[in-house]
Image (tube, rainbow, N blue to C red; front, top):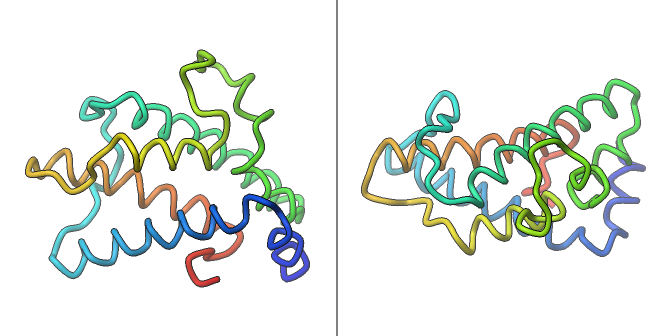
Length: 147
């Protein structure tokens, strides 16, 4: 894993992925300090913005691919998956050019288009659940928010 993290640190997307992970960790931590926790599961009926739907779909794909890479002890591949475009373009349910080309692009779009902390508690907790899933997907290999 250490070798994979070293290789990951050389990727052009590394800084952006680490920053996204830190941003997610900070939002989740601050909300936890306020007594707010993510919903237990993501409720697709509460999704209001297209970039939320894109994030959920891309997280499902990334989680499956990352878990597969980890089972094969290919940690370098597992860390590279969020920035790979080819894994998501051919996924069922994606309609280019409307969807983000990578998980990194999806999280950036999510933060640009979605206000996570909203007045509606159900929507807020659902959006926190999406961020918690993002954090879990990455934590499969390493906690990038600590880099």
